[in-house]
Image (tube, rainbow, N blue to C red; front, side):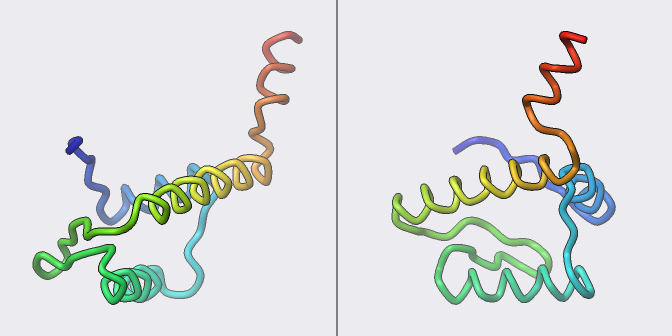
Length: 93
């Protein structure tokens, strides 16, 4: 298993903001609700208060999630005006 960098508090907000993501409503409640949903499906395990670990899921589900994350990042980058074409055009100018 690879080592994962843990994001907390303001670091998480900075990463979301940098990638042009926002959490609707009260962020802590939205994250809590999302984790609760994933726990019910066995994808996330609650280790202790505020600490969660990976659960189990089929490879196809993991693949679908990864593809969805990639698509969301690309969409957010386009909304922020950070697409690859603009990047390469800026280098050539």
